[in-house]
Picture 1 (cartoon, rainbow, N blue to C red):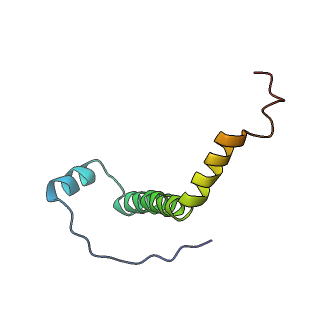
Picture 2: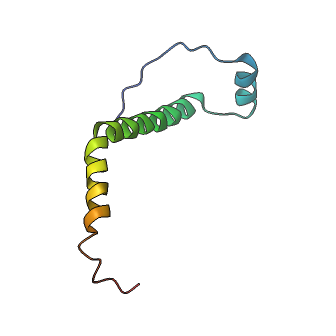
Amino acid sequence: MRMTKKAVNLSVDADLLARAKEMKVNLSATLEEALRERARDEERRRWKEENREAIEAFNRRIERDGVWSDGLRRF
């Protein structure tokens, strides 16, 4: 699948940019990777918040009743 690219203007610390260029860092690829990771982290955070009550209720039930396999485990 081909991704559409969009040109953007950014402000970056000049010294950091110089160091990155010196090391031949691919700025576009690095930014995309960082944005993907940040988006995943934010999606996880939102999912946890949206499902917090259900997760807490589930954990309370497990603490109270245990899990179905409690009597079957051998470890």
